[in-house]
Length: 182
Image (cartoon, rainbow, N blue to C red):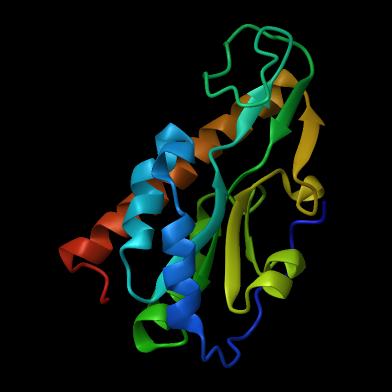
């Protein structure tokens, strides 16, 4: 699956409200990876945005072979690790608040540009215009939804992933505390 594409410009989206309501009806927070439920929930409460999909990112290896593994990586080398991409994909409304959030999201990759990308993946955009995604993936694998990496690099990715979700959580919290205009 190809995941990464440069961010696109907003286009007319006259059915945003109806699309948002439909997405919120389908949103089941218990189906979201537990570590990011609050982030997804917070985003879902913003009138100018709705989430499309998300994933905390999973590290699959010999000691934790389950595809939905949420456990931290062990410090001891476990050999090759299959990393399933961490990301949040959302649709934004072309409003002042939506544009402010877009600008804030576009700044998130600055935490680790070699691992964090922001864009408008084509397959999301084809299903929902004005969709954007932030993802954590080593840049050489930016257009893939999983990669096999060695343990040392997996530890780096895990650290960045955790910083990424902390940053997103802080951003969402700031939207409700008035620090970022909403």
